[in-house]
Length: 446
Ligand code: AMP
Image 1: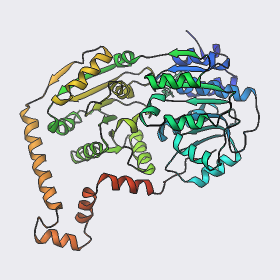
Image 2: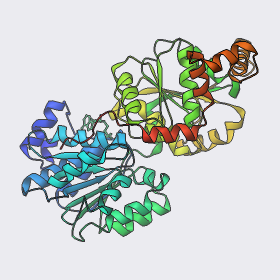
Image 3: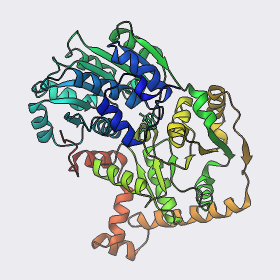
Image 4: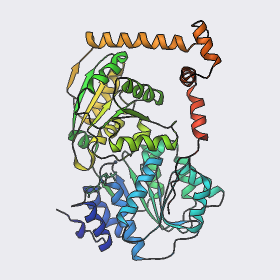
């Protein structure tokens, strides 16, 4: 079996890997590292959890160390584009970890954080810059960043970039890069548009492909429960009665759904937090930190917020709702099967989700073992009680619907008033205020 020392990586990198406890390269690392060290472009079909970050970070660090030169002013020697802020931070952390004996500067740039510190960091230049496309374009437009001296360009999670509408921004960023450069391109799937982009960017790439959809799915112990949509919250609370659900990611399709589910878990006595695109950076960081430390058992997330997040020892994934895209199912359940571990995935499926289930089972070429909890009398009673409580709460929230106490609440700044007002605010307004919120920390630490 291949060892890291067989791949041609320098001693400081091997030392960092040893202190990380990595014993041997993952398949994508074994396949990709020699080609990247040889200076070739790379097309990697791989999802998070396969060790792909190290597959590009290690040879990039090796290359930068073999040809030391000052980082270019306002620019970088290696540029990594990532679709999300969380993934960008994680990639930057990986570069710092693997490069800890090399003394390189690593910076991360994304939206939602202050411009000033980012501009100052760029001004000095960095060895490795990890960025989300939107904010980098802002800096390029303002001439705070220039990429003319970049030597290596990494596009990570290209298919998610497509989903998020980043294709044009990527083409614009690429137009700032020098013609002579090494390109590393990673995507979990290869839809036509992504294949086209790879064709434009890559020159005679080495191709590596690992863990096709079915392989990851095979490592995860999967269960499917048929249940009425309106009884899912009760069933979820019941699942959490099992202490085996230690660190569980619960997936919903929508941001509002994530908030609703997190709230119902908290009401059922399960420490939970939600994470999605309408949360401020500070809220997202806090939710992740609480989940990682174990002070919350459940992280309720949308696909986009959760994709690429690397959290160790996730015991369970619960698909509260099935995803619209079958590939997302594989990504979701892959959260519990990081770097060779196994995990459990439980999916709740209502009747209207049957077509989605069919697509998933076709993709993974598996029939998920199922049980039927429809028409379950216990769940029905609890769901009815909750619905009654919600109606009562909603009545209480509606101004004028409750006579004097409600009017009194409307006149004074009591806690019930602020609670009601929050519930009644439309999601768009929440998003807008989230956008204005001050970032709680600065991601720059070059
Ligand atoms: P990634 O696919 O890059 O998100 O990596 C998934 C996880 O695997 C991360 O937590 C890495 O720290 C870990 N990892 C990457 N390469 C190895 C390796 N060769 N041995 C053990 N763990 C690894």
